[in-house]
Length: 217
Image (cartoon, rainbow, N blue to C red; front, top):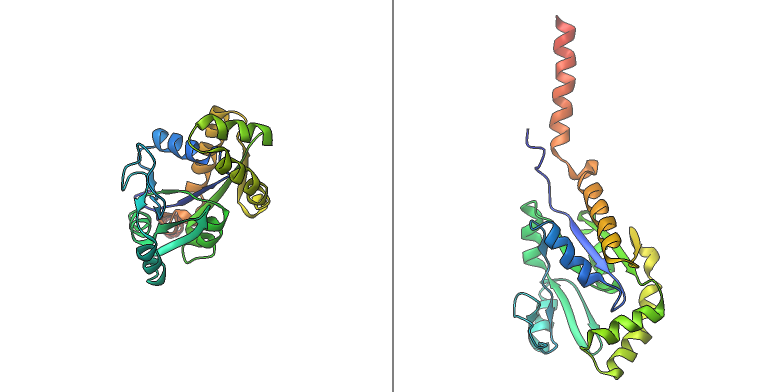
């Protein structure tokens, strides 16, 4: 009996920019190296230190659009003038092999995946900031974006937060360690759901057969 045999789980992490979904994804992967990360494709230019295939698959708008038309994207959206999407093939390969995959995506992408053929394979988690002032402080503290871009992210955050009720779980990231601990608990519980443990069918049939054999004695 192989109790580890199961289909992989897709873990959707969403939040407004600066609330911590990328940090939480990195922490989960450090905690459990068996987790895979769904590397997004994007039309934006690489930032300093970003590596092709590790942080993003960088592509042009024409190639990105063709992937969408060919059904090669699980989800896609335009964010701040750039296109982002999750390539389908590597995700489906991981799930079929029983490996869990983390998605670091916004509410639009999460909604598309939940409504796709992979919907039964995912759990969705939305991460909220402890306050809006703290959200802005984190964005400015990253030192990656101009004031104009930060203002745009802050303006968009209200709309993003309004989708919190669409998710299976919602966490407030007021403390990194505490938030990570809650994420670990969610992941452990979701892995143990009855419908994600196909070996149980054969196991319980075996128990029933044992009862029948005892009755023959």
